[in-house]
Image: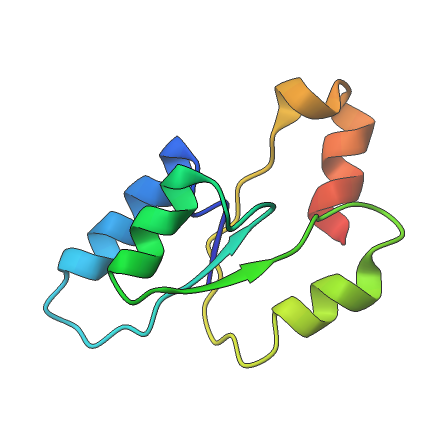
Length: 92
């Protein structure tokens, strides 16, 4: 499971896994699967799941993570604005 698969950092992680000689089944989380960067992963047969990792969305987050064995996570400190919000997002 790669959180933020359509972002630069998440995409880099997914690319590494995609090019690996190991048989990874990549599932990518994104806020909007209709955007072009996300669509590129669909073309590579990566399963996308849409979810916003925000307080109040815990049930959606749990559902999105179903079946995940390994997770690569990135938070967006700049967009969140404060350290406290970034830590809260990471704790979801």
